[in-house]
Length: 418
Ligand SMILES: [Zn+2]
Image (cartoon, rainbow, N blue to C red):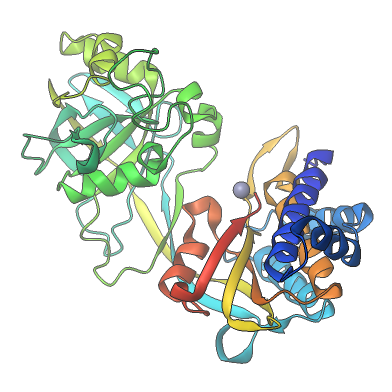
């Protein structure tokens, strides 16, 4: 499965141009910004289309096996990136003078035959529902007769006076939540319109947030009701995860997390609501109203899944171009190198190459590194970071933020190519 789109080159070009302009302005001193800009831009080499293509073709090659975290392909891809950074004259910015920030992840895999049963009806893992658990000690992820409660969009935003979990004791209960945020389908003039950034998905709309928010109120489970448009991807993307989920090694072994996390098809939710005499669309509309309160279904669910855990090692790659006059201040430019690895074959091809997501972003980052390394040295240090395990919930960049190689309070800006 190989796709190469010219868009990647365009994104990189725009990004490089904008950055070069910024550096030019920062360094312009007394001269008029316009003249300085023209002069500075001229002295940076142009972004090279052929080099972009070479990086994309290389990283998306079958050789790297789809770059899933902790695999041989992940190892080889990060070695390639470190080599490319070294060749550009960057300095190693990782741990102990190396190019790498190594860290451990847990890989959880749910067995294919898990069930979600309500009354006399059973839904199956993979087909109708995808369930995972990140309880590393393997305890208590099966739930018996857990009450189901609809919690709107699963958003608790005190600064907007919005709490979809309000007024419920969540102990032992499963929260059913919508994907995206309450104003995604708002009509102009609705009270909620624009409150959550309109069509754009913010942090409150994303699935990792919803898992976190449900855990915070103490829910035993949280299942996202999948719909293609607000999720911005189809059910196939959810199903293709194969019930595999990576997570940090948590000091509390995941005891603060909901035991069950996952997604269900919209049809399953519609049927669950119907069984309780509730109308899915009507409740979805109610969930867009300020002051919405959770709605209990009069159904309970019994969940039976098997989960295995393995430890895997992965790594960020970090290289730095030391600044000319303010080297202790940094600008971070990052892109993730991981993709989905080897999964269910599509037309007989089981390697998910990830040319666009995100070999193209990696190519852009490396090409920006080359132009900056070969032009006038920017005032601030530029840190180039190749993030691991982005597809698993931004784990590599999250790790960096918690273990920064350059102080965050001296990091002036961060750019991401994806
Ligand atoms: Zn991506």
